[in-house]
Length: 445
Image (tube, rainbow, N blue to C red):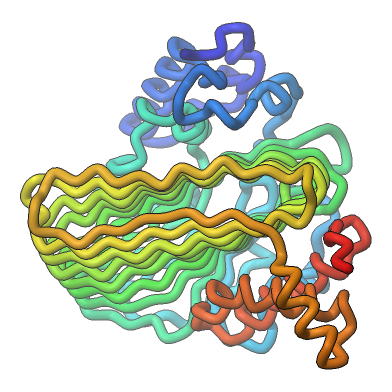
């Protein structure tokens, strides 16, 4: 079911914001996505994939698209709080979806590696982009992928040729802010890692606290045979912001791939992660940590498609909810008939810090092969009062005891982050979140 009460053309301002510039194949992609969204609209809670997430608060707002780069108050001095000064890395910054060349800092890269604004690549190497862009994230299956594709003008292209190792992490920073009105952005990220290559990529989404804006990113990841790729996505949007995101990854043979999602901000957050295991010998890891308080809503939808035999997947998502926060976890593992010897494990655990917090969790297995090992489960509960009592009997303050237990719960995800400054920053972010007076902790006696 689609929401036909929304004036989609007015909301997206397609005719004004999807420029005619660019190669003909890109204009065709935009037009097809626009037509699909105009015809089918946005889903409602009658749609099974969206039944716990109301889009009307988002769709009822009037957003505008900034067609060119404006700093909107972001300066080079602000980047130390948003990046990792103690870590050598390559950095690309986009502000409201537009490349900020003066704030980006891409160092010397191995021969053939590209870390570049998508707008620049469309001008300089459109044929290379055409080979991969919009081949995997399908606008017909997700209205927000269609919305992104209809506005596809800029983003980031990361291309790593065969056999190349990029030693330093690649940090893609997407910042949203406005001095007037409510901006929206639809950044597109395309990551291509050819055979036997290695890289670490960090995507950060953040913005000016208190601003109302809408970020709608789509990330496509294409991984060749024998690749080792670590991918991290950090979402720390304004508490008044809307964030709808899709990650679509296609994985080749004998590769090691991981993607971690860490979510702290946003009024309404929807994060879709889809991985297609298209070769034997794949080791795929999906981790997530989401925290929310007040009236925040965080919706995680994941799908792991086991299409070939002899592949392993491991998924661990953890949530911490306070106040009247709401969360959704819908995780699916799909094992195709030919995917024998699959080993797949999925788990979602959530701590509710108040009686008014709520999560709807739905782990799923669809298995069409008979020689597999697949498990899934979900656990929802509160802080263990017996553990708090035990720690207090050892002289630990009750607030500190609660914080220690919550940190221990979250660290199962945070400690797996391999980039040291990023891991330290995430631990500090969790401590800051717990210490905020708005984070309601239960009154354990």
